[in-house]
Every structure is written in C-alpha cells, then in structure tokens.
Image 1 (cartoon, one colour):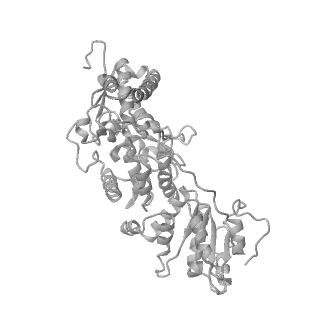
Image 2 (image 1 turned 60 degrees about the vertical axis):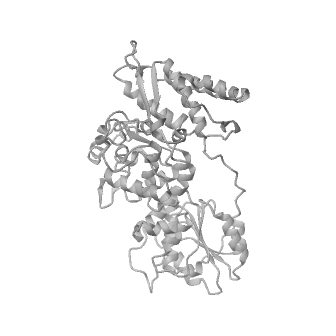
Length: 506
C-alpha cells in the first residue's frame, strides 16, 4: 500500500484512469464516527452500511439503500444483480456523487471492496473505506490497489484497460476528518423551486363563477385590502398574457391555429398554471388569462364540474417535489423517468415513447417532444440511423420535434439517471430513451410503458385520472393520437377556440 501523500486534496483529485481510494484506519471503532457519517450523508456523499448478514450478491442492495432507494421497492421490482448495479451507477451519476463512504468496511470481502471501487470509478467518485477492526488491513489494501488481480492468486478475467493499479492512500481517522469536513448547514427551500412562497398566495375562498364575472364577484365578496392584492395579481397576469399573444401573432390565423394551441398548452403548463404555488393562485391566473385571451379573439373554456371536488387543485402540476422524492426511491430508472414525463405532460406514453437520447438534456432539465403522434414515426431508430452524420443533424431540435420543453428542477435528476443508464448500455445519441429490454433494439411499446407508469403511480399513492389502459371513447382525449398536442390542457378540461370575425367560433 502507498502512504498518505502530503498536500493531496481528495476533493480535487488529479485526472487519472482510476479514482483514488482511501483506506481509513479506525481500530478503536469510535462512536463519534457514526454521528459524523450521518451528518455527511447527502446525494453528493453516499454512506454505504454493509449488512453483516447477507449473501455474496446483496451488496448492491446496501448501495441502493445508501443512494436513497426504498429497500422494499428495490426487492419488489425484482431486477437482476447486473441491472441493479447499473441502476445504482446511473442514479449516483445523475446525483453527481463525489464520495462513496463505506462504514465498517472490514465486513466486506476483497472482491466486494473492489466492486465498490469500480463503481466509484464509473461515477467519478472517491472511495473511502472505514476499517473499524483490529485486524490487519494489508490484504484489503493490496486488493484495492491491484484491482483484485494477483500474480499468484489472480482473479479470472481480463485485466483493466488502464492496468490494475489504483491510487490508494492509507490514512488515520483524524486525517479523514480533515480531508472530508462536515458540510455547511442546509438552507430551507420553497416547496416549489422557481416559485417563491409569498404570504399573499394564501388566498381566501374565491367565488365559483366563470371568468367574465370573476373580478366583479371578488369585489363583492372579498375584503377591500384582499381584493386590492388580488386585483394586482390579476392585472399583472393579464399583461403577461398579452405579451404571450403578441409573441404568436401568425399562429392565430388558419391553418396554423394548432401551433397556437400547442404554444398555449406549453405556456400554461410550464410558466403560469403548472408551477403556481397554490391552487387558488392558479385559479386567479386562469381567470385573468381567459379574460385577456378573449379580448384577443381566443376563447379558453374551463369545465371544472367534470374534475370532481376542489377542481382548482387539478390546475397545478401533478409532478410536485413530494412526488419526485417518492420517485427517486424507485430503483428502475425507466419507471421513474417515464412516470415523470407522463405526470408532467399529463400525457399517455405515445407522446414520448419515441424520444431519442439526443432529445434529452445531459442534466435532465429539458427535452424535445414529437410534434404529434403521427410525426413520432420520424423518431424511429431506422430514421435516426439513416440521416447524415453532420453537425446540423446532431442538433437535438432535429427530427420533427417541437420546441424545448423544460422540466421542473427537482425532476431533472430522474431523467438524467435514465439517460445515464441508457448511455452506459451504449445507446449513444441516436437510440431510444425507453427500450424494450427483451429486444433492446426496439423502442418500448406504449402498452408496456403504460403498465409501468400505472404500477409506479400505485406504489407512490397517486392516481392519474387521465391515464388508463383502454382506448379513449371520445375524440381529442388523451392517448388517442389525434389532434394537437394539448394533453395537459385536456386533462384539466381546458379547451381553446380561435374566434373568427363573425363569431362563428361561439
């Protein structure tokens, strides 16, 4: 083993084929170490606690549990050991994990320790193995340094491409405290990142009237100071809507009205109603948007009666931070990512099942969607392989897609994990984001993704009323594959009509 090198900072390791591993000696098994590791735990610093009673293949479940996955859900999904290790690497890569700390690492066999070191190399993290035993750790250190290969008793298999040597430093517990200090205290964040929590958002009960009478009814029923605040929000929202319409003057005339429908769908979903902090704030915004659009010759109808009790609660996004925290406890990355897209878009899988890896941002912050179900065939693998290998064709906007669709910041890690999983499989940029794992060359079928999403939603305790297994009986419903891509509005019973000069749209 090599000794500790002075001046080496593990937070900024040099560029090497293999990541540095640290063997930390804790012969006294200090109690304070457990409390310190609990304070260090975060997505960037994962603490693995090996179960003392386990089989040779159970280490991956300890790693997944350390990464925040539900142990019961991990077992119930029944992934193979290989796919479980791949999922662990994908989740840690998406979380940008920098440190993997193994508490009581003396419980590991040499082969398990080397497997964790390989995982750290894959995700670009530093491995810290806490040796809390009086036994000599020389053999463990030699195994880590040589990647498990020995001249006399070598493990079978090919040697690593960069050679077996891994930088290894043996340090004491005091050096570990110095090299990996405690993080700064966390700051509280608003419930919805990107939406600042304001006391004025907690509105009283609003009148149950349609938008032409909404402002007048609020004046009659609300206190004067409350109405002044509401009126300010209402007027500001109307001005925002006017600016939105001015950005789309040409789409209000035939035959491009479907483009306006899609633009309005994205505007309501990504900017105004979806990220609203409270349902009542979303209702105020909706009424102001309806009034402003009508003055521009656009009738936006809302039918709340078909949404059940508290229909304003259906206006905001279903993809809340609480839901995303539950989805991050899911082991299969495809189940979590497909559920994120379905809940955010309020769409059936036929809207995104043909998305390619190139149509997803590296960090999961946005994606490009097919313009419609009919155009989704242009995103098939055959088309992707036939196009020219030019820089213009590499642009993610190519391939009959709509504009950039942003995703909530708290959901980006889930989509990034699925992209990391697919790239680890060698997907590159031109293959599908969701594939049939019995036939990886084929895209995942809509029925398979629907079942996967429904099972995931049932596990986390939500029920998307617009997603079902059968075929919709009404036109322009979700999943029919007809009409413009306005699934988000359809799920909230919002319809838009462009009025002509004679009022024929009425």
